[in-house]
Image (cartoon, rainbow, N blue to C red; front, top):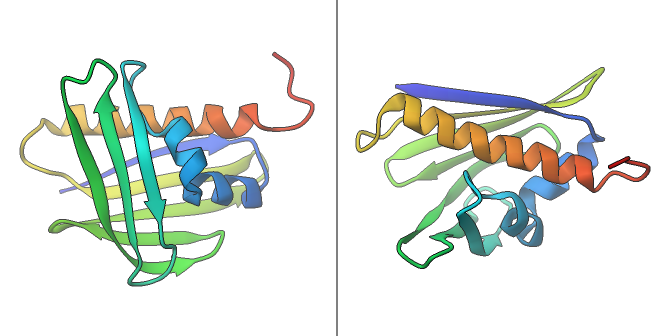
Length: 140
């Protein structure tokens, strides 16, 4: 089963792409809740290149690596990857509001589909807030 989540990021495509693919940025936005964080991230952005994000509970009680291999990269448009026996796709779609970012991935069996959707959506929402906060002239 595939799950999809999406958000609109009010920023230019180059800024959205960069924030999604730069380890220093990933460490700032890649968490589903305030009690989690990403302590390490690596990106080799090419077909056959590896990626990894170390996600940990801030209290040190649990952590895991989200890692895989890129299978297709179309700059400013598409990232396809595998992680374990699952696949994921990130689409960057420019529109009048900014960039629609859609992430689709194979569901896993350990957690309920709705839990997975909520977690990935929360990460995507953090991503949008991170990118928009970096925009010049932003108020607040």
